[in-house]
Image 1 (cartoon, rainbow, N blue to C red):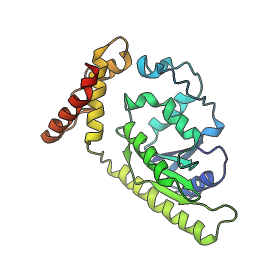
Image 2: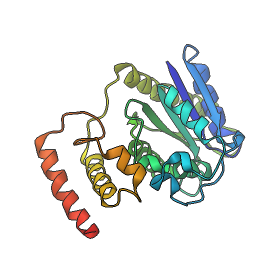
Image 3: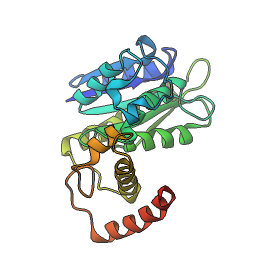
Image 4: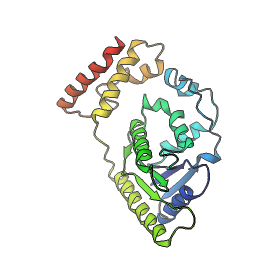
Amino acid sequence: MKLLAICGSPRKRNTCNALNLIRDAFPGIDFEILHLIDLDFKPCKGCYTCVLKGESNCPLKDERDMILEKMAEADGLILASPVYSHMVSAMIKNLFERLGYLAHRPLFFNKFAMSMVTCSGYGAEEALKYMDKMLSVFGFNLAPSLELQFRPGKMPEKNTLLNIEKSKRAVKILIEKIEKGKKNKPSLKMIIPYNIFKYVSELDKELMKADYDYYKDKGDYYYETNIPFYKKIIAKKLTNKIIRQFD
């Protein structure tokens, strides 16, 4: 089994140390930690080229594709960020922006992921909610998120031990989900965006070429699966209500 941890901290302190402890606690697993601070990974320009024309046309030439390759090769992903001002770090936000086309064209339906934050007080809930949402939109099957509390100065040993135990339990759950291989069932929150993106991609096949090529041969969902009839009906009604603005 191979796990990839992406660390979005601008300094190698609490978040980095927590990931190192997790790696050491699972010596039998191929566990790689990727530090965004060490990579050539430029800020998103917001040009929308990756969405309209395809990710290969991004004007930024850096290590984005290497990050994607490692995500694709791993069985599971741990996305880790410190909490800054009740939100993820700028590096994690930039990661989501640079991979924003995956919100239109998800890829990771056969992969599993866990959000992790280190926090000193408040803000973890908002940050984890955002991370879980984006990972889910990209297609990942989610394990329960992990919040680790750190205090300024020297941490009491009991707090350190608590963080270690919480980390072990969380990662064990992620590993169990990977071993079982059971994918999340399509929810309305995934079916409706699918319907909308598929519909919009057909409005202008040249402008939305990348999306059109992605959706043109797909049926009721991103991949072959049984969607209950009642979900299809509800999703269709809600989708039609939303897409009227495009008519």
